Amino acid sequence: MATTATRLHLHPERDRFSRCTSLKIGYGSHREAFDAAEQQMEDGRVHPGCHITPYRCNECGQWHVYNRRIVEV
Image (cartoon, rainbow, N blue to C red):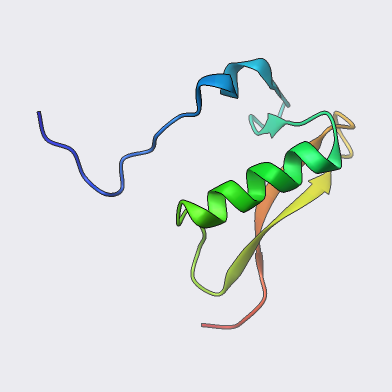
């Protein structure tokens, strides 16, 4: 079985979060989204020049995370 460093590892509790029409994971609070963002940063799942940031969705009202560009690369 071959594995690579880029293989996505899913957290066992991931299924307890709902999904938005944007297909992003919805978190019930800013704290949950912030914790998920920090974990994604630690896992290296961030684009170059970006920082993973939580935001409240206008469609579903829940919190999501996204790669916010902070530096031009």
